[in-house]
Amino acid sequence: MSVGKAQVAIIMGSRSDWPTMKAAADSLDALGVAYEAKVVSAHRTPDRMYDFAKGAKAAGFKVIIAGAGGAAHLPGMTASLTELPVLGVPVESKALKGMDSLMSIVQMPGGIPVATLAIGEPGAKNAGLLAAQILALSDEALAQRLADFRARNTAGVAETVED
Ligand code: RP5
Image (cartoon, rainbow, N blue to C red):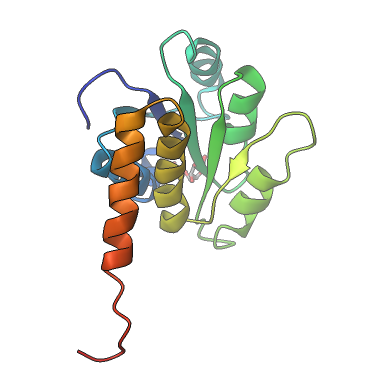
């Protein structure tokens, strides 16, 4: 975990979501953004979810990344309890391969937005990057690290198909 005061909270419905959500943490680590990761379940620990979401802004968080699978209420419920931006990551479920998670998170009725990413690890990775981009709007050093990160990505793409 990055040192410093966490500006990003990564919450997830179960410990079983961590192998997916770790990709968000890895993105933030790569960009030197401090985060805090915790398990907060909308249906198993509703009081913890309420307390976390209500206190998130005062705790100094600027962005919340929320991952959940199945009937994935966590991102939407969290978004309903805070004005901080919530980035939702649909965790891949066994039964429906994450389509249930995706539809649960993306189909928010108008009024309470959740910015929904792709299913699984790519979504978690991008959630970390998107959180960093949001923070970079008011952090020039981070904006530069993001620009360097993208430049490295670009430089790593070969144009030829063979070595
Ligand atoms: C959701 O149920 C979690 O977000 C997780 O993706 C899914 C399964 O949870 P476990 O049964 O593995 O704890 O609440």
